[in-house]
Image (cartoon, rainbow over all chains, first blue to last red; front, side, top):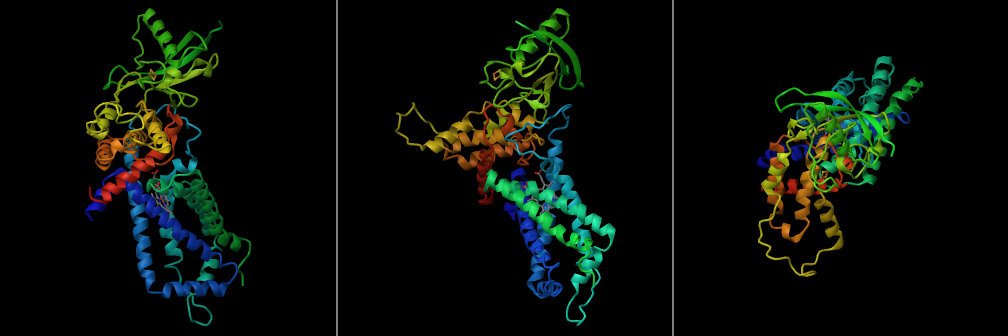
Length: 221
Length: 251
Ligand code: HEM
Ligand code: FES
């Protein structure tokens, strides 16, 4: 506990915790995205997967973990960003990117803004799906989450919001993945950063597959 | 020899507590082989001739080794190009009629003293906090008495090349000093003489860095791109690892 407090009181410690929680969240996103790919292929498979997940007692532990990581991440994210802004009270009149070998990108300079979009997106997403209407499958044996998914994306507003928010998530992960490892002081290589960027693209496209599937008329029955 | 004329918009601030602003000047008789600081000398000669207050800026060696000079030229610390200080930025990097926006290094921890001069005392205080070894090393040891692997020697040399100019802080969007501190930590902690105080040093220097009001690292690497000695951000990783290790051990 004392050590956690010591970590939280230093910039390096806070950034390491941000990196760790962010990377764990990305780990969760990989699993989440992979499971979503069931939606276009198997209605039953997706419902059964979801049923197994929510009836496993360990789910509460996992959910608590995700909640703690998410909360820890965005609180440290906001604290660190505000402190960083304070470190240069008088702005430059002209400031240009320094160029190679700097990795500065639009994604890296807008982490707080993409993060704030996620801070709105994630709770809304939980309200829409996790705490959304509880349809049952025709045989009444389990939740029909597939039906809800298709229904949600039949609303143009939901569809547009997801198609905007998901690339922003990818944007956050684009810089976040490599940066997280660097903040932990465990790895620093161009290869790892490129891997993270590739992963961000895969995550974005993978998540967008479901709303796009519905947009193209999938799931209508 | 052909000469050129450039417009300079330079930050003028009479003292730390007074407001500053960009002031436009036209500097003629600029030769391509002049350095940027020599161009400022020409500007100051004009100002003296006109009976005006000269532009204050730091410089000493004028050969890129002391780290005194430094300002932000057209939005980049030490100006366009890589691996050089402002005194090694030559006017051939610009063309006749160009406008040069010249500002001091900006950070809460680097208060402006006058015009382009900033107080970089925070760097000295971080060194004083732990950037030394207290072992009595006596006279220089015989060559090869203390064997050090080539990779380690290279890494330590890369860190030791830091001239403490402050461009890393000036370039960072968070005005973070981690590249400077990690170079000063690394030049000692990679070598045998630096081992005994390795963890104490990193904690003291990092704590002092935070007290001075520098920001955190966002892993963008703007610092490395403007560093006159092109010091690698790899040192930041090693410093962070050492720091986290010390804190988690409860040091
Ligand atoms: C699905 C949710 C999220 C994931 C997967 C995620 C992932 C990451 C990762 C891996 C990093 C790199 C950490 C580092 O630089 O050490 C990061 C940085 C960051 N995150 Fe998140 N994040 C998420 C949500 C949020 C939220 C809700 C905020 C709210 C403000 C946020 C704010 C930030 C900020 C400000 C940074 C960069 C800080 C800096 O420049 O140093 N993130 N994120
Ligand atoms: S004056 Fe010494 S480095 Fe520029």
